[in-house]
Image 1 (cartoon, helix red, strand yellow):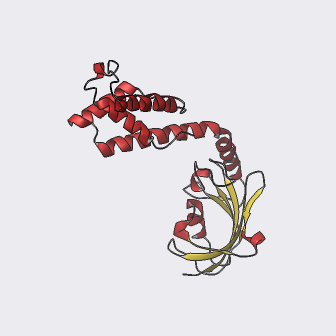
Image 2: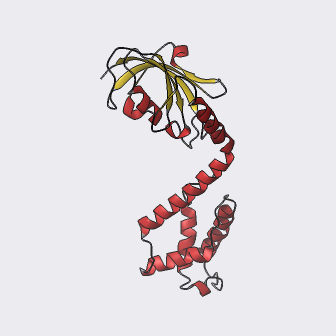
Image 3: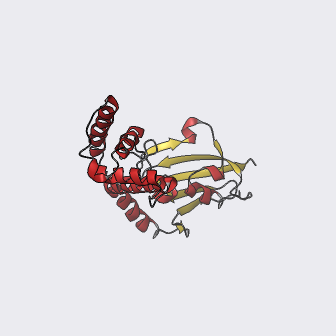
Length: 231
């Protein structure tokens, strides 16, 4: 996976280039002191380190230009703008690589949800969440700020179970504002005493992140039983 930060050693190597004074002087710089050679070694080491990072292509002259112009106060990005640009650019590379790697998972989930929403009894919300009412309780409904007690089990589309409070023998308690978006949404639709079967698109579950055994872009199935509202 592509790194989300640039090594501080790389920055040190770039700073050493400032002393060259201009782009044309970079390659003609003579190594006359131990500090010069150390700076050169940093440059060699970090060029090869970055060159091995998938999707990242660093132009050392452009990097030196940025350092020189930052020193002279003529750069078109300030420090925070540059940091934001780097983070967003590398994040986009990460997400693109992740989407390509797990495209089959995303496509499988999309096909499943498209077929599932045609079944009798399946309700689809505006967000794309789908659910079935297995049992409807007669108690109050929680709000987003509520703390709830639930029993649940979670499965992949294959039917393989990845989590279950039933198996642990103890209900889970949590604030609705602190769970994945699909849970926050659907539990608010449940009167106490209800049991729903819920189908979560990846963007309402764990998104593009790996979460334990759950791959990025995974569509998930939960059975959720709302036992009580604690607060």
